[in-house]
Length: 175
Image (cartoon, rainbow, N blue to C red; front, side, top):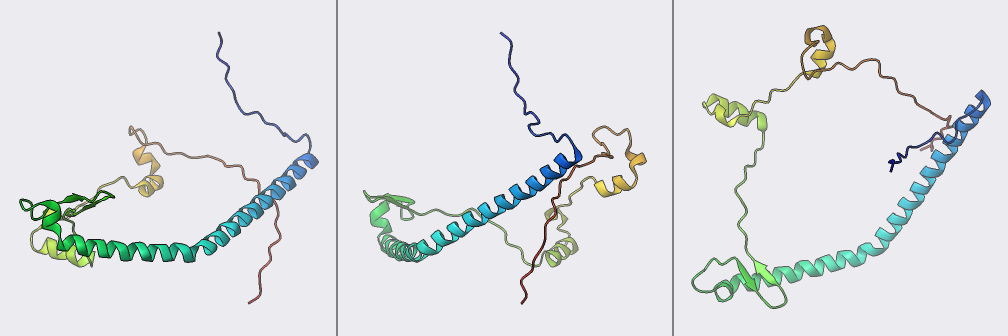
């Protein structure tokens, strides 16, 4: 049995210059309709968000208050919850849910990167400075002959894009 290959067909090929101009006008009409639909959708999303925001904000505040209270009680009763043998226990089951304590992994925070880099290098701690080497594509475009024939490098030229830009009148709102 032969495998059937499906491909898109050119459904609307203009047959004349006038047909082509009409197709471009239709593209513009469809793009504007698309933008109107997108604007209508975004207006609806904004209205729904605004409608539900007060309730969501209230619920979030109530959850935060309850979480703070649960944490305060659990901190005070940690040994009771996790056992005497493990004074710094990690998880306790409270029938309706669990509470847990987790130690975050160590992290490094750096402010003033340039100053820190200078200080590290001045103190002979260059092992803490990362140097990133990467191909300079801009330089290769400026000197394509120098890199011609190198495996993995391909200078792409002569690529042409086809762009359809329906005419649009623009209007601005005066301040």
